[in-house]
Figure 1 (spheres, rainbow, N blue to C red):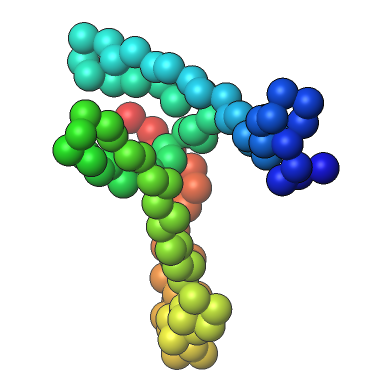
Figure 2: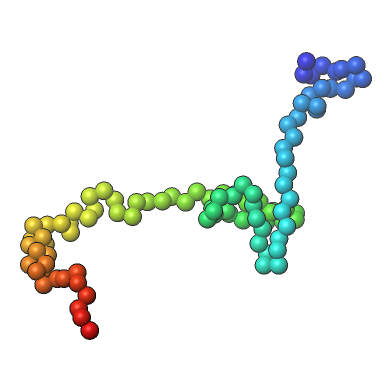
Length: 98
């Protein structure tokens, strides 16, 4: 039971602590490190704690749509379509001879 001393008089709660795995990485001559759990192109915030330790925090960039829904409708008008159809007969997919 947690909180109760066992036979040698020590509290068992110290034994139940979670031990996390620690990874070590080595910087190459270009000051680069490879983070095993990082995804390609993932961005991290870098913070020097001042005591010799460095903290990397993943940054989640807010992505917005390149073209929000309905934003291109202003380019598709009957007048514009008429202009494009008038230009079409002069266009050719063939390469002119040299």
